[in-house]
Image (tube, rainbow over all chains, first blue to last red; front, side, top):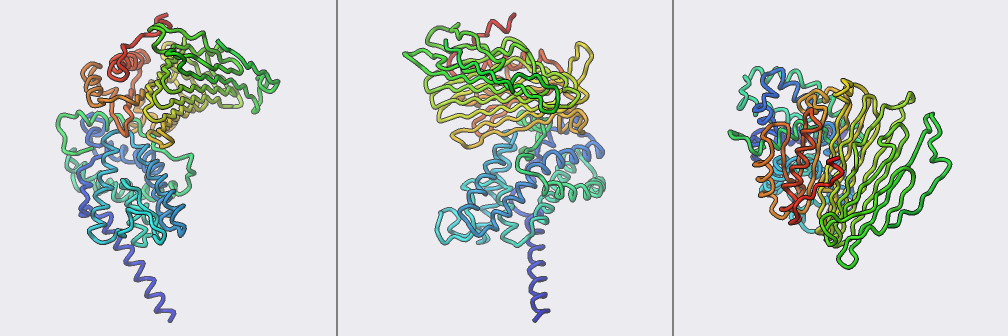
Length: 247
Length: 294
């Protein structure tokens, strides 16, 4: 009996792990590869020009961006999706979804969030992972409602919760997907060699864990990205002459 | 005009130099339209914050111009300044200051100052918030919050220009901590949230993702421009072509940001942007407040 329970438990853990790997895979067809989050502009401005300056830029964005913004909000959203009182939870989800949208510094960063959110929602819907009542409030709805135009972070939290991924692993997965995507941008546009990209991963792997630890300790009034340089670069990208990426 | 409610409490006298040092000053302005004229219907103040008599350099039926005065000229440890302005439907107010606002070095106790600005604009009202720059002296510690509450079709344009240190005297900002917050809501929903902790000892102060070593920064916001793409196009055409500033629009809020090292460059950029935007925004030519020229 005991071993049977253990076996069931480990099976659900394994399914959660696979669900997370599926969600953070570059093969997930939501078009994340099309966005650089200001990095392409940083190349153009010569702010990032090689492996060392790339690692510095990414460490900075991780600490002053993800750690204070996406990661702690992801944790709050994940917890809200797990709440039984779906009315309160829906309000919490809507609040953080709005908060995230309001912190997006530029047109391209705002568009990236809403486009990836819409793509992920479409994908979930075509995999029948989106309850049909998700658009309409109903009394017997067990999951909190997704806001009408929920952003990527909100959809990411929703999917991770659905797949039974723990809060910590959800945050780690999100940070990992961000790092891999940024390095793919660098390999394509800088260009950075693939081995050099792996060296940057080796260097930043512990920083991802630190970022998650830090993100989980922040209070609401400590949140908010502090990326004035990235904001400037991203707004300049709107008029960049030659560009491969949409942000 | 009504300049009333001078409240003086012994606690607010500021004659303390310990951790409890606190000198509060507040100004609460309300504007409303009466018979086609924007009137300043309330100007309550407490402590050293005043307004000059409103005037109408653009004509009686046009914007009501008001100078906000802070006679001490700057903030020291323990100062708590609160400026609120409310503009009712149909009214149009333009607020500015006669001089730069200085943020002095924190006292030996490291006590911070606070400056809160609350701008509330009703449906059909217009507010321009165009203060002169803020100069932070080395060692200054404090928090500057700007809350903009818009309703319905409210129109609001404003800026904050912040210069760190005093380059002319070769006194850079190498210690201290200033936290700048912006919060803009429309009918209660947040559209723009931003925070800028300015800490010269933090890696982001020099890092390219952060301040990039910039000692002067400016942020201009505008809400209510009908043809925003045309406005952005006009700004990009006319303003100097360099990578120290950029403009964007998200969630209906136009944001122009500057990161550089020149107070004059930042100020010229904001002033020129305002001159270009005003006709597109409210179909009025910019009328430069004379106090800026003195």
